[in-house]
Length: 505
Image (cartoon, rainbow, N blue to C red):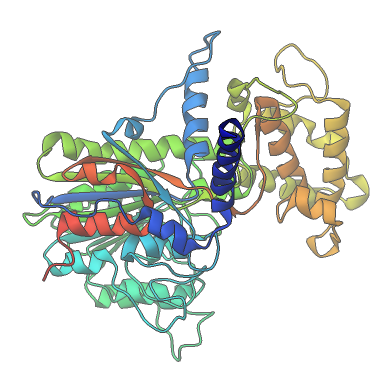
């Protein structure tokens, strides 16, 4: 009888673990409630919070494997991103109030303000009735200077949760106006999506930058103006001079030499915010998320590496003031369902093949658009773009002794079909259900090229949206030990608040 009971008990244990994935979020919250959010140590003077949007374990691992592959060794090697060696390592759940798959507004609100809310909501409860105060406002009241940096538009969801309250993340004018009316000290990186209020229902909207200037902000929008900023510049909005159509900074893979990058804004922010009372700076690498939405592994990897460079600018402060500094690095959610492994390469990966990619999906979209503008529809030929495809992705139609990335007959056929779709006007693309899955909302030819290169490297994606994966948390400095273990993303706020005494009057 005893021999029969043990297997049954083991089976019940396995079923319990498996079924836990389908239990209500309250059950998970109870599991995480034992984490330590109590701190009695010294309050840090310099606090940095880095958020890799769309960044979880796969994005970090892919970057480390890519860097390791550059060593050209026969055995697989990785090169660790520096922040992964921080002394504290944790894991945070990312589900929000109504879904296991969250967005940046809900997860950002959890990190900034410590509550669960729904997709698209900025610092309000799920019913959109009650506003909550982000940690930044509380620290400002305590004398800290406050900085918010992002590689995407500064009114995007993640930066917005650190200065705004809004029922919808898409209310860009209302969010930007709250920035202009804030008493924060440094905003850097991307621009504003609706500075004139063209999409607002507010009467008589004023230009956001005009409002900001009236409120004492210095607006710097050239490289020279930004580099000249210092801690005597007062309140600052530093808008990157090179912005894309979404008012975001370029992807790192597309950035030209000499153009400002995320780490530059962190370095400058440290200088602008320097004061005797200390500061809090939130830094978001937003285009990691965008690259993964587009299933562009190479673009994601390059932005993740630059994210690490930005963290190391803060680490210089820690090295100088180890007894006054706290640095936290995390993601808000995973994006794309990136997997390191593909059926076509089985147990092998070839990260060196990603080195062949020289521009982001956005860059190749431009090549396609330029081709369509310069070529009559009756003259469209897929073969016309083969030279640009080789330059951008290293993919060739036949062996030429230089690439090593020869397209198979099946891959070539997929590209030809995608090319036909890309040559159509977007309004005329009546996708089949299968095409909706393989192309998403992206340019068919471009996204097929990234998929083929990803697969040749041994990588794959499962979605063009977010996933429900937990995210890693790394920390160094005062109170870093609180960030060890497994907990909810609302606990990131609670730990920061405990360490900075933000909730104490």
